[in-house]
Length: 296
Length: 296
Image (cartoon, rainbow over all chains, first blue to last red; front, side, top):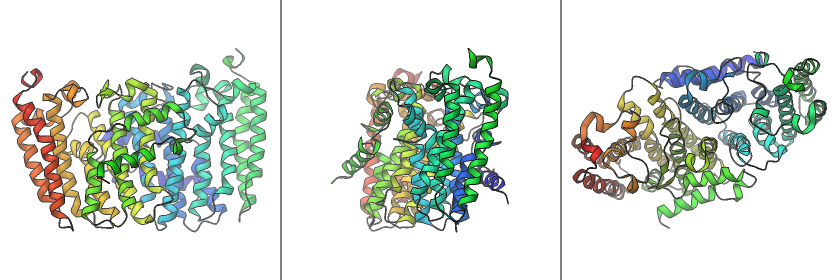
């Protein structure tokens, strides 16, 4: 079965009615709204790809890590869209959770998805308790303080911010978690895989910053112009458009080079190149046809 | 060292500057504001008491469970106080996190404390990976969907609510988690300890409902009259004052009876009785001198 399908099915199992029997109906609906249909599912695919590259002997554990990292990502989007942050009306081309279900349920949906991310790897069918516990630690460090997603978001509440530190936490942490979890599921040493996660995370953030200025809201499925509207530090502000595009290309090259020696190194490098191509065309098109705000 | 002091020191270690080095300064301040000074720390004490009653051979694990359950409790208070729920100005006699640090940081503080609750038991010094993983599952089930704190809070967003189901999730879940975690840390079978957690949880909720009507805001350190103001289902509404007091007494008797056979059964029963006495005097005083709202 292809990777993307395995991820969708695993997410579906976690958010099916059966395991949530007795839950408040709207909470489960809102949780599903936050997770389905998903975006590119890039983090869980990265986790599974690394596990595969490491010849993982525990596919259930790798899938659990993939689901965990995606649930944390979905939770962060729900809370980012709240009125006290982006106050976003749309996400993935549909109403955001806060718009569809209201602020109280959006707050609780994010909370419930964070918790679920930590429940996935505790199932009674987990055979490698030590690996699973190490993976729980990876998820927690990628999500919390001092250097996870929540800490990244909290830098927006400070007056002095280091752009690189902010982005490493807000976006990079879950990419590093994805590669780390894949290696940990396989019982491999995770450290050599961190640089790949770091490069991809930074590249993805730069691409996101560019799209926020030159992208089209309908095509992206979410509002654009958010960084400027919320005065958030971003690569477009510091590097300009051509500088940001150069930075993106350089980071993707570094990512390819960062794939460590492993049983399937060349396949893994190909996957990274493929991901770069998936992002670059959008950027090139946007570059040639910038929307009015981009030149304003 | 006495139990309460061990809990404070363990919480302090989790929220000390060192493990949060590099975190956004306000986030860590807000997290500490949410945890220190604490309330009665009843859930972590219950966890340690059960571990002790089961002759626990892994005190670090029991303390980790105690800290985890208290952090989840603190997180739930921070999110409950948010403008979209209680919009509370005070908590434990001080400004609530949302009042002191603003809504964005309050949202993130709750998130960060939930995550930290799941990080505590993954430390490199944890020697019993299987026990720790089972405890992580207990924490997740007590916090999330379908029957944890978040689900309990989400019942407030539904039009039809079963009072008992609502309270079991919103308040009971962390009490059941506390007794379960204590037993799991000791490697004991947790099921016999669940009834004690359930009775104590329900008793505590009834006491809280009564205090919300007849209590004094200054003495409680938080606003009163919240259930009525937010039209929340509560025991005062369904049972009246004398019915609610009778229900509390009956639940505490059931709790004492629910202590299962264990190495230190009589000490454990004494502790439960002590907890009942700690809560009852306040109630009796309130009963004799109800504030105007109680009779309105």
